[in-house]
Length: 439
Image (cartoon, rainbow, N blue to C red):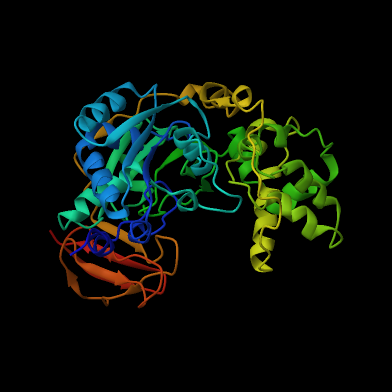
């Protein structure tokens, strides 16, 4: 059986948030494989924990991936500040074709376009992907899962960080489908009366007050904050109100554009131009939408750059959604040249922490290697790019640990879903399964 087949059977997907099925990436040909360990979302530490405690698996997964795609160069990008992770991975790389590339402590060092340029000096073509320049990129946990897949172990558990307003911030290993409520309890409980979760981080994550939201294969963690926290209050503002504020208040200062990491790499992303479209109806909408097409949704424009606390990232997100709905593709220039001020405009994580009012929560979140043992899990049927999986079990069935419980339709893009432990199937719907532990 080939590595691609092993990885497909194990249900491996991008573990850093993207969720693209990994077996598809490994079926390509490339000269370089990069493991993304930048982890630039403030307060999250799960990638650092994976690199420190699963370094051998990470490097083995890299070697297997390199062999599969025909790459001669393997690089693990890690921020130099993560000294324990750097030491562990450097030791694991000894005697292999995999090496460590040290990154600065800035946001968003983990953006694929930025990482590929930093490591290889290559610029991904506008609207392109890393394979267009001969590179395969995956999260460090993804490559550790590739190594596990090669030995027949499917993806059933996830490493996440619980940080912010909790008694004891921690990085946890949990069965997929575990609720964030259980994870917060394992971190000593919330220290605020009305907690809100920033799932996946403050900058790019989803904001919800539903503590029963389940962990998926793409979860990276949650920052727990009070509903009254200034940034949370901004994030919870309705989209219509965000647009109305921008329409009335944007003075075209260009700070959102001048700090944009994609703009500084030379791509035609200009959030201030997108903000202009808020003042129009249909006239010129398609033209202004193009300025959002290459946005990576990092959130710097909204949460760091804008002096008036407007919402250019959200305006870009809306523009991109409109373009997808109308099947409008990028038609701008293909030439990319980095901005001469790029290095000087990078945003240090410490500055970002202050701007986000998170400095009081900047505490260690050490790994607890023993997995949580919840009695119930909720498995969402869509946990990757592509189509949702289709349940392969029914209510009342019993399943064993590692058993396939859902699979994508034949020839559809997606990933298999496995039971994380022996269980009885309590509920089956079009969107999720609920499993009750039996052992």
